[in-house]
Image (cartoon, rainbow, N blue to C red; front, side):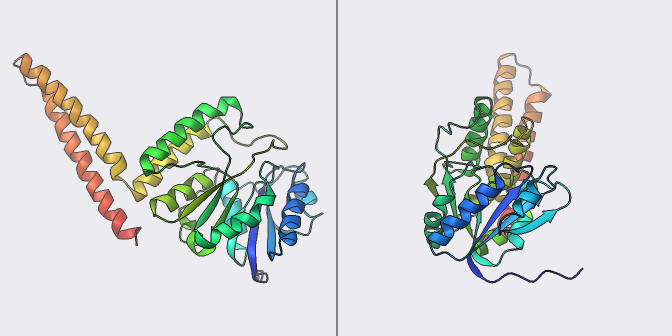
Length: 292
């Protein structure tokens, strides 16, 4: 297959992943194009049709955006990676196709990106349009990510972002194909001590139906643990070892009161030492392979 030539170099490539978004894709593309044209920003809008089963592809072709058509549903992250790879620009923006994110913030975010590696549209603590049933899961996930990354993360998985392409490309192999793309790139950049800037935005009512399932929450939790284990493993291994050591100490005190030292206290101490040792080894591997 003959590879497609790269498009002309522009200031900003805007990637719009679309899966069954026939009701919103045209308006989203036109809003992005109008805002960037009025701001005098050279741009390339890329719609990635992620194997949609409705008329998303046909509707996208009604616009002047470039189309990347995936024959099968590959996932949100996979669609973004394909779109990012097909662009030719210094900066890359991503925005959802469902109409929830304000395209008119892109020019200001691009200006902020001149002094940052990633600019994120912060939907605010309320996120009025997020379903109530999803808010407890988001609270738990954000709390865990804040603790493990040792940073206050205003919005962990916002779908409106502007990246410096050079800062983004080194993390592409680590980014997953599913909805956790945004969560992963947030943790990757923060744990690598790159400059991430948050700017407040209005979060609108989506057009169509959300693709996120309740079971995705557990995938997000596992993802956070995996990313932190990759970049800062001691944040996981040290507390885990401390818990085991504490249990062993409590059991030891209990045994001394009864004058009967049990094997369980010894095993808890040994387990704590093993976990701490694994953490130190993981930290050395992380420093050697992932940090500048």
